Image (cartoon, rainbow, N blue to C red; front, side, top):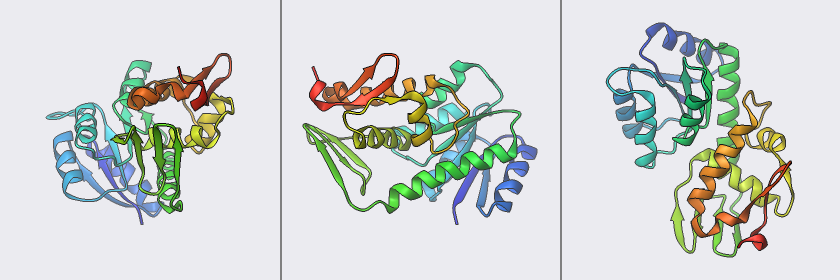
Length: 228
């Protein structure tokens, strides 16, 4: 049974989310601010964090960035009362796996939670497999990526994206196809989400960044032979 941490400074919001997640079969714990949440994820194991952005003491964005800087790669769904594109993209760039804008449908949130957890479970159940492309190696069993022998840190979403692209080497993939397969359901977001994650992934890959090729008018493809 998956264990989820709900982080929001509004007790009624936490209660609403907890009731729906528990009804769906999940175990839940709560935190009222980012500082408390950070202490909890550092001392206990969670399968997912639902994290509000606007909170006192430590806001959600600061908490998320601190988690990732400490290499706490627990999947995160951010909650935000702001609908602006900047806030969504900032959360994704900080390492979030998904976002939900307030006011939200509890059923939609549960669907997103289920999708993120399903991806994580599928990844952990994958048989040991190492894909090697020149200086880049991807170990799907240990969830590690190395460039020129040096391990690089990716968020769960970035890793899923890299594995999907590499598994379809040489194939031009549309943004819609990437959203469908990597996000694992009919994603409610925008094509810009894919572009943002590709940009972040390329930044992590250093000398192998050129392996991910932009196919104008379509999307992207993984092509190590196209590296400049």
